[in-house]
Length: 135
Ligand SMILES: [Fe+2]
Ligand SMILES: [Fe+2]
Image 1 (cartoon, rainbow, N blue to C red):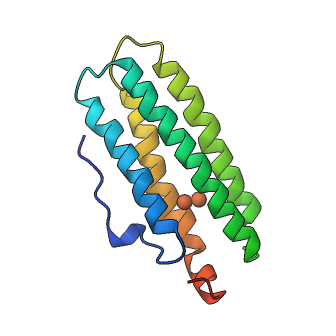
Image 2 (cartoon, rainbow, N blue to C red; image 1 turned 180 degrees about the vertical axis):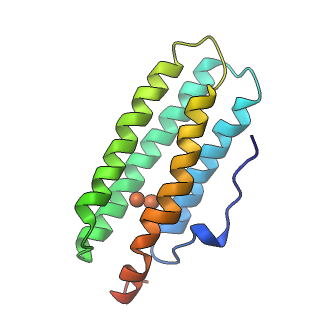
């Protein structure tokens, strides 16, 4: 699978969102790179642990901003973040039962989530935050 390239459709243009989303994308791409190889399963576990930890920190930042600016769909958005953490943890643990490599279902899950969540869900609050004066 090809790497996902950063483009304007991912850009929110406020706060630390773009910087953090780019870092998340770089972890998603590390996982993509490993998928074509027989990467040691410890390496894959390391990338997944890093991705989960960074996602967790990013979600905390994003939710803090949403709360601070009174974003109306805060609860719904927070639920999506929590669902991602739970599902990704479960899939990551299942992947550890394998001898090596990145299972396709794990890669598809993480890549689809990145594309869908940022382009659709995070983007829903882009205008709201801009209108609320966030820079
Ligand atoms: Fe989000
Ligand atoms: Fe986000």
